[in-house]
Length: 322
Image (tube, rainbow, N blue to C red; front, side):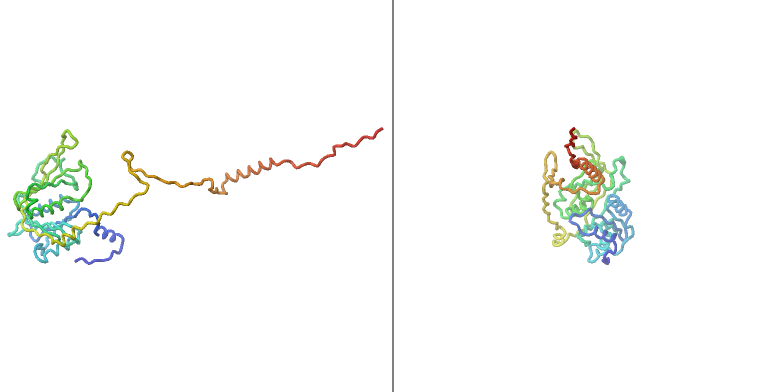
């Protein structure tokens, strides 16, 4: 196993935080591995699965020996690669005389094998064998439709397990809302028999229908193949119960002074205290205040009454009488 080390810088710490468990998990990444021996058909299958999940997939081209998922201790290498690449789904291809064109899909929980399913590939057709208008080609990373046709997906244990694995591998990131104009692909899974499923990839063509919802047509763009279920291993009840745990929904914190209106939407009420502008002290060093003070002093000086002059004798000296 990988040695656990404490982060020495911020970059490593941020990367470890991305890999840490979260309350709301992001989309699952897929790891594609080659066995000791693979056929040409199986190589094409692994390559096209990688192209379908290009933004959320990691592909190793080197051949790996000693991986035997259904044997005791044979899945330790898968757990090692899962921890190394932070991938939750592993697609492992191998070819032998007993099991030709063999594909093993494994899901992990806490980087340990959760469940396994083994299928054989038959009647494979690659993307290049289909002719269609290239303008209809699905965009990389777009959200797909996934449809399952047949009662076997509800009644047969192997097909129910295969349905869970295919849904987990192709659905991408879980979202609450989606734009209808962004839907341009669909995976069609049809149960042919209790152990065989026909899988094909189609593009969506939207046409006018005279209503708000457009009329949709399917154009097969590939790949397509038959999946024959050979072996599968379900998780134990204890492991399933632990993996299915979800965080309790936290009560939404009440927002004070906020209300919702059908017309105006979100309305908030704001309380502003008395500003007391009259009590605010003005700065004494402002030039305007100094000029006003000078003018006030000069005005006061002019308004002061003149000091009383000494009284002159109102009585003039009498002239000498003749």
